[in-house]
Image 1: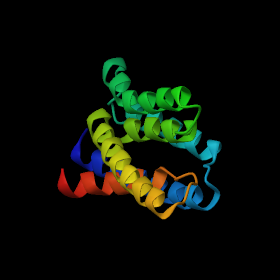
Image 2: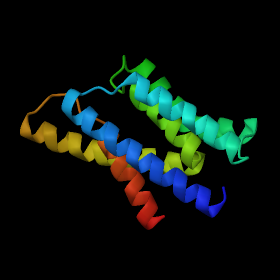
Image 3: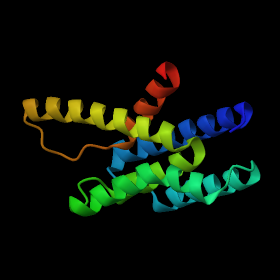
Length: 142
C-alpha cells in the first residue's frame, strides 16, 4: 500500500478496535453490525486504493480465518466476532501485519489468563482489547 493509504488504514483500524474494545470489555460480546461494516469498508478501501487482487486479499483473510476455525474447534471459546474482526483488520492492514498483531494479542491474553487463573477467576476474557494492544506494539516496534 502507499504510505499515506497505509497510515489511514492503520488509523481507522485503531479507532475501530478502540471502540470495539470498550464494548467487548463491558458486554463480553461485540456488535455484528459494526464488524460487518468494518469488513465491508475494508473491501471497499482495497478496491478504491487499487490494492484488490484475489491472491493478496486471500492472504489478508488468513489470520481471521484461522481464528474462525479455532472458534469452531473450541466450541466458540474464541468467539466468531473476534475472527470476523481480524478478517476486517487484515483487509485494512494486510496479512503479515495482522498475523503478527494476532500473535502478540494471543500472547498477551494468554499471560492475562495465567494471572486470572492464579487469582482463581474463571470468567471469559475479552480478546479485542488484547488485539488493540498487539496492534499498538506492532506499530511501535515492528
